[in-house]
Image (cartoon, rainbow, N blue to C red; front, side, top):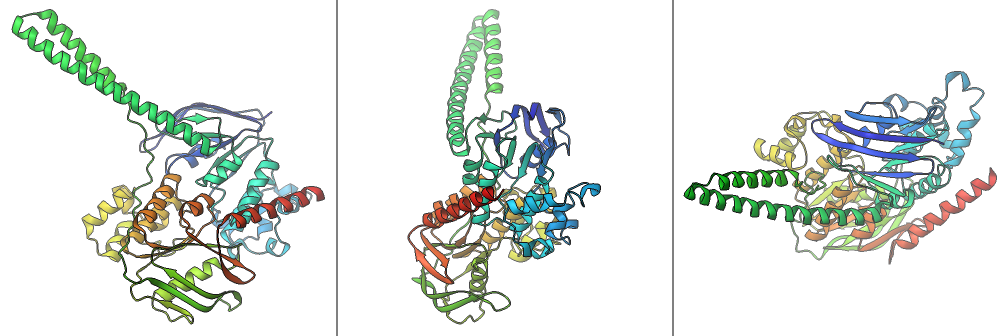
Length: 516
């Protein structure tokens, strides 16, 4: 039996991230860890893995427990290694020759093509790099598994495969998953912990059900706080009245009683805590407007790789003002190439078959936030690119969740979540009326995702979206375009595509299990 116990666990950085955590995770428990960017998820996972210390409390692991921790970032030193060698390097050097078969077994579990195994990680997609991190951890046969944002960069097929793998291969050990993917949490966890500075609510429920229970808890807490504050107001009015009467009548007893009422009111007020509000920095968009009915028209457009290999063809397509289109397709079918091609056309480059209205003002975000210069500071980037002025730029960055000291740091030192927030701020400052969003929710926490979705819906801007986040696609999509058999076709709903991907992975998982 393996277990991990948190006893009065707490962590203080610049402020308190969490405190008084008391949880026991045993074999088969699968915990979803939910909090905003920078609110302690990674720090807690690292402490549970034994890689860092808490500010208070203890973490107790059962004797001999081997904890596997899959971090968010690929170690830079690993990028020159092949996928196979990177996984092999996890084994003790003395065992690599005799136990190399374990690497093949694990890579087979993740259906890794033979051709990819000998490629340097620097030449592989972010999704395959993520699989390499998980495989490197799993080859050591851990007794507990900690996953930090495991779905980032995965396409839908690999995401469903990972869900199935967690529910099968890792079903008998404790698993902790920090993720911003709501549907992934629902599919893989049966417990949820919402990290908060004071009390961190825990529910023996998957994310969506836990979120409803949390809303009820917060609502009850808010009502109790309102009652307490009304009581405070009442006591202070009574105290003021008794003070006046006591002074006018010369009654020391009334003055003493008035003091007691004021002290009682102060105690109730100090105990009345404000309900926690999850913040992800200010995410705001807009719509600079346009009069054109048709924003973009496609006619016999071929989307190809940088090397010129044909990916798919668009026969005819009109994008109307206010449309919210989602591009669906398997990994490698050309979704990002399409977004890049359209962005170039919107930026003034002539692309055969694409007609862009002169009124289009594009706002483009790619998966890597590549428009952000690593060496410039946040403040220098915002003031220099958008001519917002020093004080205005500082205010904008502060509203986006960047403290004054962080504003002077190079962008390259930011976490992925912080880079995403900065990228979305830059997107807003472009004042676009047409959004091109390629995986915009990568590294954006749940509160930020919901805010981004609400902003797009509220402002009615035209939008083309590529995303593997099923909750985000369902909440935002209005028209759905599927890359299928080397053509782009419009479909009524994303659900058949989602179902087909799930069925393919279930079949592949069954065949793999049968072969073992």
